[in-house]
Image (cartoon, rainbow, N blue to C red; front, side, top):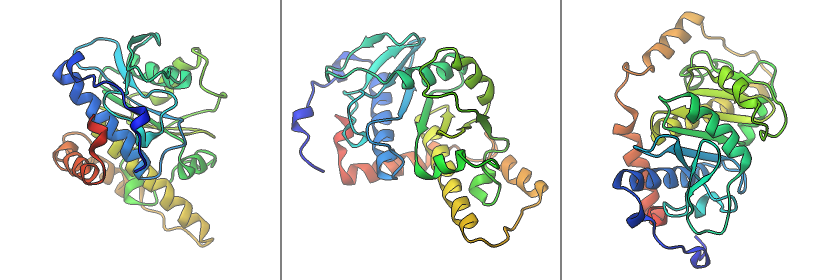
Length: 259
């Protein structure tokens, strides 16, 4: 990684609770992982996490940092109205579209701790297909009925929030048509692993469709069984294995996300 010394900012560790500091580490790790897996889009898009024990507060990236630059201390704490509660001293503000989309979900879904929105090439391509995501692979069957939200232009209009929430419902994944992907989870790991599965499902579908040969359809009953077996309570907790492994992988590459 290139020298990021010019972006060094004072540590926030002594200024926040232990629970918030851990949330900051996890979210910074999420940004680094999104970049590592090629799902980032320059400085755009966003992942947010609810601040533990602080009603209506969540953490978001400083608008101007690349994903590989995000650290626990660079994250900005805002409220559901977009007001900055605790600035990180980066000199950057927040992305309004990030506030509009994420505050809508955090405000309406109290079961959700983390929200991720991406503009990956595969995600945008599938979002532009009239058929949407097809249950062609096991990864694509994890979601059951996936939500869809029609494109209304850049997400800066607060009035769009009610329609976005309606289209998400109680689901873990939403395809923003002609736009990109969104996932929501109880933890950062839940949301990231769901996004990883969704991204891989989109990639696989595009590859299969590009072969210009008949696709092998899976019976609806089998799709349902697959989805049922990946619902909460039917499978060991995601965080027991995936998240520690992902953090170890990041630490081997660059542990700066923990700063």
